Image 1 (cartoon, rainbow, N blue to C red):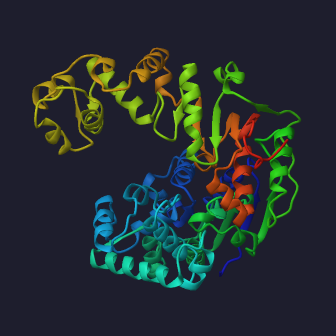
Image 2: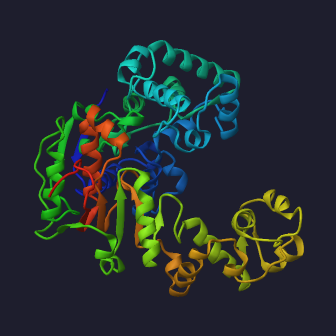
Image 3: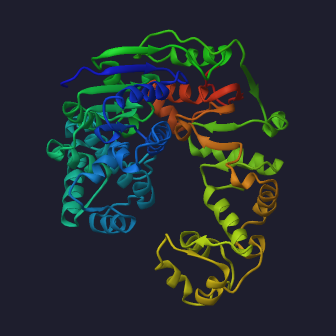
Length: 505
């Protein structure tokens, strides 16, 4: 590294992104956004940073914020273009190599989080090996279980690499590896580098950050090693702990009151390797209590924002069943429930179309392909619509006259939806709630990282898979539950655990 970074060490809710925005404000007194790289671990984080920056500096156009991206997005824009590996590619690969990789999981996530079979496990190990820049021997020693010999790991990796090369495709890790190899020739004028959520960066991503830093004059980094929860995909909390620079410790939690902070710190105290510092709460309030059944907090669920969290998706169905039984509207990571942003958009758009307003072709495509039931569209017209420009807009007359629409009934008579969804959606439409995300979200802990709610119901139970992970690397599991406990602003409810693997009050 050529310039010594400023490092913001920031526990949950201490305002690290705000601190970075303040640093950006100072930077833009001397330069323009197109000389700034602002990168963070998630697409949502990068989008939030870009949005906040545009709002704070409205005189600059969107193009000038073009380097406010994840490292994957930066790499995609700056490497020789090849085709990303697709669902159908994995089907062919499985057949040719005699594997059983789950294509949907591999394509949607870029890495395998659950590895139920041999193909998935080998892909997971190979991704982790490349993300951590390990040798084959290191990958063998660090695999979650002892399923494969070192030669099996190497044979798979070489065959997979050859297959991708022959078929001119690349995966998400290839994307970063290629960017690292060509980044010396990437020559924008970079004055400032900002890195948020750096605790989740892999060894490979840190190598890219180091190369960008060599081009910059100033580097500002923020992270919290206690919230490093992506070790399974290459995240390296030790890289932040050992990073050399000018440390600025943010010690005031703007999110957590005293009681909730004390519980979170009780979990964090179990982490053996972490940065030590004291955090102060935002006030003396906050409540924690055990819950046996969701019916015990039915009245509380009617007010405020909520996260209902579990360690993995296996337990989410329980929450969904209980809320369905109570008739409470929610959003779920599983895609079940009365609400999804996509479905809400289609319901609203259909109603607008019936009222005489233009709607986007993009929306029409979604409605035609996913929701209309029966003979609502004349034969062949779905394919016609699929070829249209997403940016175009159409009205009711055009849809019926030119694009085969035969059904002008209300959405609840036109859409193919489970009966259990109809009434909650009609209620949300009538109250205007449909235009906003529901107050309640059912999710895994990983998916709400960086987010917060007034209330959190946390299920601390571990599955056998998680328990095995705990036995191998307890620190990683402590970090996950620390993240879960620190999402609440006011009230933390702990679902009474069914096992003895949990964090007591």
